[in-house]
Amino acid sequence: MDTNLIALGAKIELAKRKFFFYCNLKAPDFYKSTRKYLVEFCNDLQEFYYGDDEVLIVNMPPRHGKSRTAGLFVEWLLGNNRNAKIMTGSYNETLSTMFSKNVRNAIQEEKADKYKPVYSDIFPLTKIKRGDGAMNLWSLEGGYNNYLATSPTGTATGFGASLLIIDDLIKNAEEAYNEAVLEKHWDWFTNTMLSRLEEGGKIIIIMTRWASGDLAGRALSHFQEQGIKAKHISMKAMQDDGTMLCEEVLSKKSYLMKVAAMGEDIASANYQQVPIDLKGCLYSSFKTYIQAPYEQFESIKAYIDTADTGADYLCCIIYGVYNKEAYVLDVYYTKDAMEVTETETARRLFEHGVNISDIESNNGGRGFARSVERILKEIFKSNKTKIKWFHQSKNKAARILSNSTWVMDHIYFPVNWRDRWPEYYKAMVSYQREGKNKHDDAPDATTGVAEQFNNGNKGMRILKPKGR
Image (cartoon, rainbow, N blue to C red):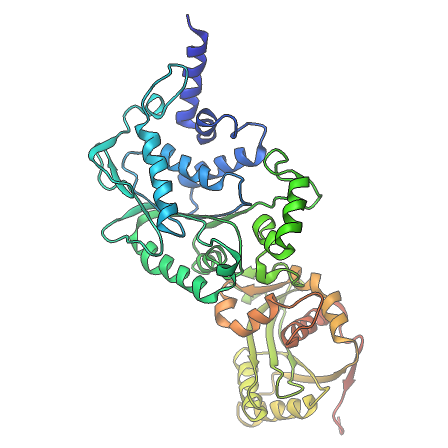
């Protein structure tokens, strides 16, 4: 009795059922059970495919096996489901062809050593159809068009997919900084790839984070906005406690050497999943909601920071208050003249049924507040909104910095706030912790919302109109 063959047979049975064991059987030197992040990644892929989530977005550092695992996952899926139709996309034809060839060659590998497992040992019924094994498009025996590899410059005409896999669309920092390239990627994904997805199909996006507007970032916001179940996995090379994700794959010594060589912003994007355009930003994340709890609102308020100069923005934030949290309902962020903004601000206060509106009066704000109050009464016939104006005496930069954590933890924005208020969104996500910021009107007004919860009118000099 050959105990080695018996042990191999047991491993083969496990590999059929569990994706990680398939990886471990095919590449035991890399897929070690001691590498926890790989075990979790493989399990997440399998659970996603057979679970309720429709989209999986994975951000991982380079050289940690994300593309290799994606290829093995395609092999494993086709072994378990010969009717699967898989479409993969990479940033160019060379890479997508290499991905395709690796999968095809693995399925076709012939047995040479009885102790070395090959694909046919695990999935003997899954074979490439004779005469239908082109590099980028091939079928399995008993199937039709089971696999297509493409790119933004390739084609997907006539192919329907039950699973889309996007693997690393951005190749370098230059592309990450190029908004036109990022927009092209999004157009390709939405107009070409999504049109190929069959009913009930699933999407996996695996990539290193580069920019806040890259495919991973935009897809996550888009699918959440649509109410589609999307799971996000983000792995940092160096953990918050200073340890490495996997010391064997990337040691701390090597990591620090790479950071020193490539620059902190690029290293943070590549290894820490901090987009280049957000490196050094004050706000690291924002909370979002799909449906505001309107029936539970204790009140609806507004905070308005008027424009100090012609180069500044007026920023009006309307929000609902519930359980000591702020749910942003509307943002009016504009450089329009006061004769325009006074009426528009009043209209928004009226339409949202605002109870209290706090208006900074440092530079023309008092006159603005009086005009808004007058327009509410004369045009909208409303006295529901109480207008309060005040002089802000505290240092702006210090206020923004000291309230930043509260803003991230307790202010909720609609999931589609990037699209609804693009200029406000950009001002918030790009505001730098240190250094000169071109505009601070959005963070300033948002900080004002936080101060209403935490300090009330502390540090503000309330100004009352004469005769009241």
